[in-house]
Every structure is written in structure tokens, then in C-alpha cells.
Length: 126
Image 1: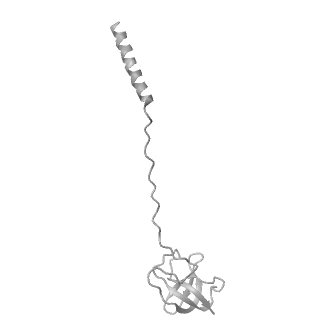
Image 2 (image 1 turned 90 degrees about the vertical axis):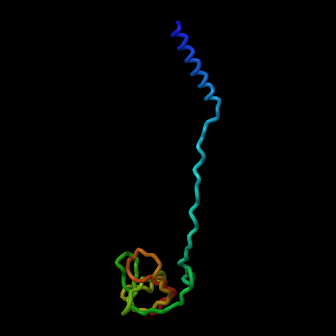
Image 3 (image 1 turned 180 degrees about the vertical axis):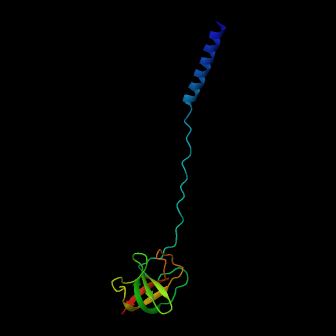
């Protein structure tokens, strides 16, 4: 009989604790904090005169246009240097053409073309 009393008493104690747990508010974790990325400086490609830092003067370079090793990459080769042409009138920049381009060298500009010094083209002349 004593064994039955102990089991019944333990069962009531568990039932009482369960009842307490059901009346408490559910515990929820705080929402994760979302931090937006910091704004980065972007130079619009539509306006070649906008640059970061001090503006570079326009220069002219005459050479022969050729295709780069990567698709869509156009190079201008001179006797001394090879430039990666960034921007400019793509209809005028045909492989094999000898022409003059005006613009600014941007050696710090990152590219997937892997060739030449990046040169932001403002104008193309035959």
C-alpha cells in the first residue's frame, strides 16, 4: 500500500509541474540582427569623367585594336604598351582597326580580361 501511495504522490507532483509549465508564456529566441552591408563607392561607367580620387586628364593613344583572350575583351596595342579598352563605341572598336582613343588609364581597375592596362575610353577616332 505504501508503494501505491508513493507512485500516486509522484504522479501528482509531475502533473502539478506540468500544469505550471503550461501557464507560463513560451520562451522565444530574439530575432537575428540583420546588418545591411556598408555602401561602396561605385563609379558609373556611363560617365567616364567621374573617377574616385583625383581626376585624371584625358590622353590620346593610337594603336591597333585586337581581341583579348577572354570573350568581350578588346585591346589596343601600341609599340610600347597594351591597353584594355573599357567603354567606348564598340561598333568603332573592331579587331584589326588602327585608330586613336581618348580617355584615362585606370591601372587600379579590376577586370576579368587578364590583359593590358585598363583604359576608360571617352572617344574613338579613325
